Amino acid sequence: MATEKEYHMTAAGKEKLEQELEYLKTVRRKEVVERIKVARSFGDLSENSEYDSAKEEQAFVEGRITTLENMIRNAKIIEDDEMNSDTVTLGKTVTFVELPDGDEETYTIVGSAEADPFEGKISNDSPIAKSLLGQKVNEEVTVQTPGGEMRVKIISIS
Image 1 (cartoon, one colour):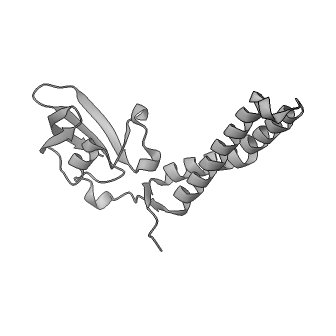
Image 2: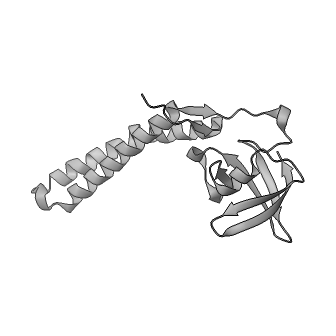
Image 3: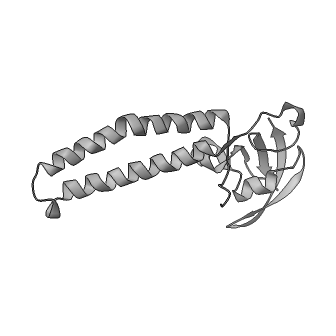
C-alpha cells in the first residue's frame, strides 16, 4: 500500500480545516440537497440547468469534504521549537530584505495545507521557503524563483 502524504500544519491550521469540514458537512451539504430538491420540482431533468448546477456544486462539496478528511487524517502538527529559534523551520516567521536595496518582507512558513500568501503564509514547498529553510539570521540566501534568482538577507526569525 502506498504511503499517504503527510500534511504539515500548525495546530491552528488543523483547527481551521476541521471547522471548514464541519461547516461543509452540517451546512453546505444540506443547502445543496435543498437546491437539488427545488431544481427537481422544475420538471424535466434533461434540460434543467438549475439541477445540473446543483449537482455540480454537490460534487464539489463532496470532493472538498474528502480532501479535508484526508488532510486532517494525515496532519503532522508543527511543534513550536523554542530551542531552535535562530534557524528557519516550519512554523517560523521570517523577515528578510531583498538585496541590494529591496523592501523588507515577512512570511510565516507553513505546510501547503494552510498556505495563504495574502495572509503572509507561504508553503514549505514554495521556492522562497525551500531556500530559507535551515538558514539563520544575517545569512544571505539565493532564492530561485520563476522570474529568476534573487538574493535576500535574513533579518529576523520568530
